[in-house]
Length: 533
Image (tube, rainbow, N blue to C red; front, side, top):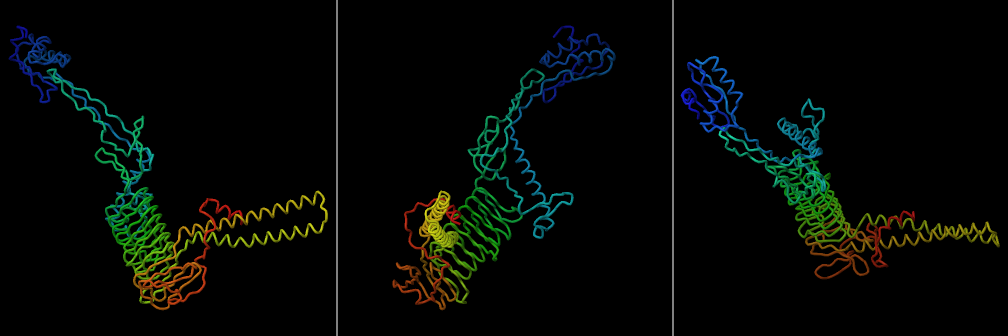
């Protein structure tokens, strides 16, 4: 520090801020201002270890000027400033416009649901304009609270992190900054990053975004009931419901459905299996459809189509069921309703001691049989057309003697049409054979009853209707013998079914002859039928 400035040290005081990013210089009152100059103040700051790059020389000049004008007053001013560190920005994830719209819809639904629940109007209104100022009512059945994405869908885009800039304090020391963080844990193997920063879903499912973690859950798990809180469910993968499904709600899945408690009069549709740990009380309006197997505790008043096998633990009451596979319910009672079973199965009992009318149709595939019936109705029409054309041709030939050119052309047309009819007849027979083969490959004509078949039970088999007028105790097996006649087997002994039931001829289940050809089914069966028609 210069000698001529030593005399002023007693007049100066430097106060450095706690963050060390600024400092205030205070000059006490004195009689003369001649010693207060830019150089003397700069030298003083240097003696205080202040970095020259942080000194505000314009502010020092102002301070010198102020002291010169009023030397007898106290003056102070910020004359030193450091540089604040500039923090880096963390990476951000921005949802696609489509998903932003869905998020807004979900948020709106959630707010409306809370208000509707508080006002106790959810049960009275399926669609409710909760907010009088809102012109679009909320459909609590069909507006979902879940963000569901498809495989291959663009989810959004990552905005990369930016680096920070270090600062310096008034002494020139570096102040480290916080660098922006990348979203290293943002995505997992459910996503794919594109070159432009976009994120693409590699699987379909329920999308969540929590704590900077983006996830797609291929299973939609409902912790409570499917009701107004969830709306109808339509999900591309497995659905698990930990409680039950309320009246009039729908659960659809492109894979499996599992429901742990009671299903009320609702709609269940699955491309694969359905498992009902409790059961379903359909009240004659609930429906169920599965592309695979069905497992349930019980079914009551349900209309169901099962493409696979069926396993019911307790009872099937007043249901309309169509089962393409087998049914395995060795302790279950079938009471009332109508059950179609393609491949037979095992039951506890059929009917009830009270004499409830119960119908069982065994070995039937109605949609295939309908095609066969159509073909069989068409066949005599084609045969009649062939006979008519042959008669017309014979009459025409006998009436003209030796034909001229024009008559030869007419004969050629008639013969061509005859050939076409005969071709259609062959195609129709082929279609009937192929459809019959499908039925043979996918049906079995045997059921086993562990306990009883009660009076007022009717069982249809191919070509027959068996009506039970009295109770028949089990264990028993009902089937067809080698000559395709209905029999009952008890205690290892076989006897005609007519010994315990009234048997009449009936074609509700078509009696199909064994197939004439090897399996080689194609998709042209419907074409053959339409052409023959």
